[in-house]
Amino acid sequence: MNILDAAILGFIQGLTEFLPISSSGHLVIFQNLLGFAEPQLLLDVTLHVGTLLAVVVYFKEDIFKITRQVLAIVIIPTALIGFFFKGPLERLFTSVSVVGVMLLVTGIIIGITYFIPSRYTSRMNIDLITALLIGTAQGLAIIPGISRSGATIACGLLCGLDRELAGRFSFLVAIPAIIGALLLQLHQQSLTSAPLTSLTVGFMVSATVGFLCLKILMTMVKKGHLAYFAPYCFIAGAMALVLF
Image (cartoon, rainbow, N blue to C red):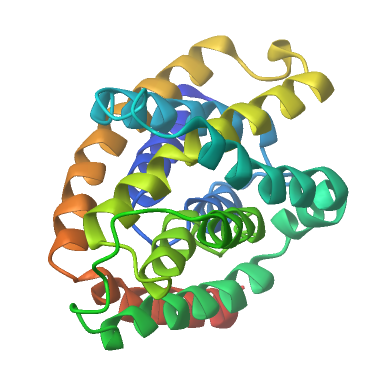
């Protein structure tokens, strides 16, 4: 893996992590296009940490305001799904056809939000059931092609959360999920399994692009335009199935 490859994948990660079009799915597709025979899991996690930095910087004032109990509840289903299904789900990262199908599913998920009336999304509190549902949605988004942000924001909206609250909460609960993924990955692979310079470049690019895209998505979520990304998911999913 060279620096250019890392920069390209960092750009893709930053561009797709927060937009509801599945960063993991796009990384699988572009790793195949770049000729990687196996998924670059350590690079994937490093790029996710770059976008994690973008979340921390963007929501720095909200991080300490979030209720600890609610955050803990969200983490439970996410952690359980990641722990028990990590192996089978990681094997899906070698299948572009799975990514194609799951991108179509993501398109359906975020497309549904178009039909949610604005008067319905007015709740400003997150109860136990809502937290568990969002945590489950985040756990299922481990599947490449399922957008984590799309699944969790859509889940929050379907539960009646205020649009901005649904968006903010979605990205805040991503913080422990990304950290957990990093710890699991570092337990299995050494940092020497990928060039440190390439990892650094990928990290910086993903963090910068991710921050800019986060601002764009939060604006669109507030306006109720999440579903605008559905056509792209349908097209990208269909192309993945046809081309690969």
